Amino acid sequence: MKIGIIGAGAAGLTAAYELGKNGHEVEVFDRAPFVGGQASTFDLNGSKLERGYHHLFLSDTDIIDLVDELGMSQILEYSDSSVGTFCDNKIYKFASALDLLKFTPISFADRIRLGLVTLFISRINDWKKLEGFTADEWLRKYTGDSGYDAFWGPMLKGKFGEKYFHKIGMTWVWGKIHTRFASRNNKFSKEKLIYPVGGFEQIFERMKNLIQEQGNHVQISKNVNKIIVEDNKVIGLKVHDSPSTWTSPQPLVNKSNDQTVLNSNPNIKLSTYKFDSVIATCSLPIFSRLIEKQIDVHNSYLNKLEKIEYMSAVMLILVLDKPFSKYYWLNIADPSIPFVGIIEQTNLVPPALYSGKHILYITNYLTKDDRLYQLGHQDLLSEYIPHLSKINPEFDADFIEDSYIHKVDYAQPIVGSNYSNRILPHKTPIKGLYLCNTTQVYPQDRGTNYSVRLGKKIATKVMENQ
Ligand SMILES: Cc1cc2nc3c(=O)[nH]c(=O)nc-3n(C[C@H](O)[C@H](O)[C@H](O)COP(=O)(O)OP(=O)(O)OC[C@H]3O[C@@H](n4cnc5c(N)ncnc54)[C@H](O)[C@@H]3O)c2cc1C
Image 1 (spheres, protein in one colour):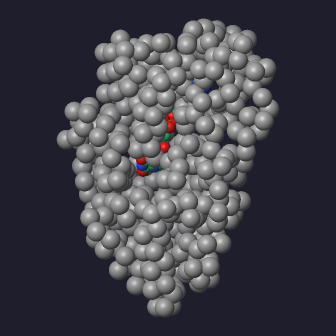
Image 2 (cartoon, protein in one colour):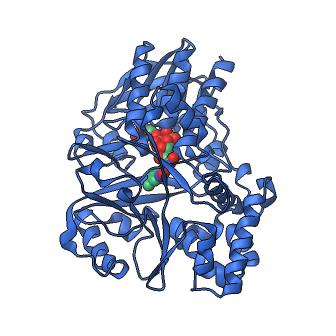
Image 3 (cartoon, helix red, strand yellow):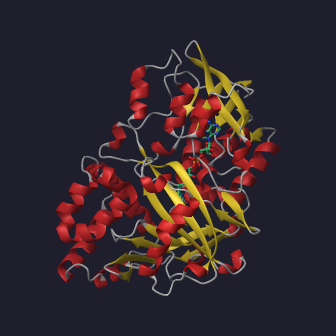
């Protein structure tokens, strides 16, 4: 069987690798000039750094096993996580459940209640019991107004914004809590996180090489422009070279606005590839564009597809000559600060990996039309920098040696209540066309581990249906 795959991220490469192991002919296309998708890296003065911060949890066994199978287990570095929350002009440590008792923005009784409710959620095994509730209604009811307003509310708003936070399903919170508890040796010990020293992309590069050794192809800088369908069956893909702007040093990926410009460019040369099956791992808005105007796709399918929305993510990456804080992960629960988190990479792995520099991601999840998401590199820097000294009064803009910006249009699917009724099946209404993307990860939150799992699953499905 000859299979075309759209996307050389964790899902696409895993599917290709599995299909290749079983003797199938596979061709993977990615419009970016690199593999790894959302978990790709860029060159930072000779070191590799993720465009968006990435780590693994102990429970991420699908990707840990894959790394083992690739013969690369030695690159996985296990470290203690350090988590804090900036609230009421102070950083509160949240490394273990006991730290919750010192979270003074709420009363002692409310801290106990917050802790017990979190423990209770971690003991719920059947997530379906929570499916019908939004996190907003469930958590407010059980943790009380003060615990919700000081802790859960800012977290949900930080991740999903004012527009969506009240829609998020309780199952999403369940998934987060279970992943985090599973990343501890016991409920009261510190969370452990894993980082592949040398960067995530080397895992994907190794997969690319193995896929090529299987006799198959991974083509980067190749933009899939159309999924070709005849008599309700997929027959191939139309592909063209990505514009050269993609090779710029700015770590851009998954920005899809340029597609419309591309489609209207008469100089673009399209190549046609014939396939028996196609797997699409791109986001739903891109997938929808690739299949739209096909007479065989019913509007009801497109409507269902378009109902699933996403948050976008923007990261400002700062290279500092001094550390910023002692935390790897700092939640910002202060509405006067225009970003929701600071992830200090060099508090998870040593600065020596980056020539002694300290690496900070300032992160925000926003809707695509948000003013902050529209800002360019320099404007975002000017907007954020004055707030850094609120968190660390000793911080000075002179600490910044370099900075980068990275935006992901379709970063985080909005997972509402009863989401399982809305997930699209992998098999589409078009014969031979399969969808395999982050909106289909559930009940856990999306992550490289789950894309690896999906990639394996889709490969099996395609082979079963041949
Ligand atoms: C800010 C941020 C932080 C994250 N942190 C973590 C973390 O700590 N740990 C973790 O495990 N996960 C994390 N994730 C999630 C993780 O990166 C993703 O879930 C995972 O990488 C998704 O892999 P994928 O292959 O499913 O999709 P993607 O990585 O999105 O791959 C899809 C690929 O399709 C390509 N594509 C799209 N359209 C076309 C087209 N028309 N033609 C050709 N190619 C196309 C894209 O270029 C892309 O490479 C994070 C994500 C973000 C955004």
